[in-house]
Length: 96
DNA sequence: TATCTGACGATAG
DNA sequence: CCTATCGCCAGAT
Image 1: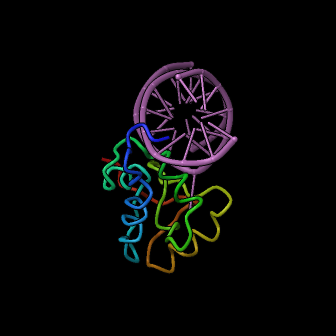
Image 2: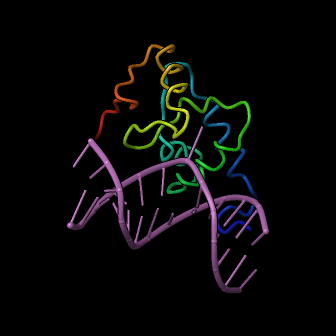
């Protein structure tokens, strides 16, 4: 069951955060988890995103800018269409 | 309740 | 820059 999500709000919240991303905006799994109110649940976010339907999955990348394994070509193309720059199958993310 | 899974993340080598 | 490990989380069995 859910250890830290008694109300099962994880998925709904995660979906909402991802749906809130506009064209040209890219977030990491960790950022999505954080904004959803579940810091540290980046991995779980990936699970929701992988199974979710109707979500702008291409706007979510790993913390290092890695794209989705198996969908790099399509994701890269979609991101480019939104005016973003993808180099070497990677999204140039500004590390803080 | 115990274990395993996976579109993650940080660190070490 | 790469792979190998370990730690974390929600879900599914």
